[in-house]
Length: 216
Image (cartoon, rainbow, N blue to C red):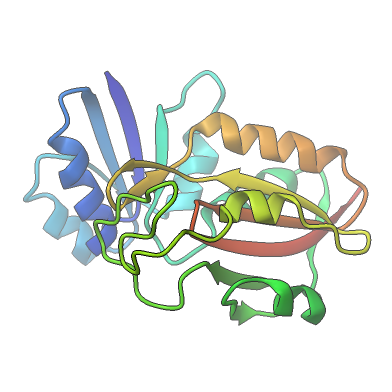
């Protein structure tokens, strides 16, 4: 029996909750949503609803001893980066830095959010909501899939930058997330680095990347 924390109760978060709710092996689904009006709408559904900012909820509640089986980010924010930044800022100065333009140009279909963040995708089209993320053939184009994005990002070598990737795994068609252990592992790795970091969350096709450095 599995427990899921869904960060965000909008269209994608609620869709994920409904899909997971149809599984037999689910014991608990928690939706964390910060907007009061959305929280009010969520009370109409049979899910546990917590009205709080998502990363703040993770900061206060996610520990190695008390954690869900899966975290499903469903907000327009790089949840892994924001959580790791919050946790490491208690011991270090975390300084966002620009992603080099040359590196951006080498990423597949990059969309710039700001100088320190970029969205990346193997697709130059809008994927269907219920894509099953097949290993070899794209369900939309019928063509062979490009290289798996999480592997591509993990292999980046650019100057002094070191790449750390949290892999998002598909749980159901159109529903992806990661185990809490992946966050703790990424944070521990980053804490040992003394070089600029490229932190990404990515599945086979889509991802988001932030650049930063930490100082004692």
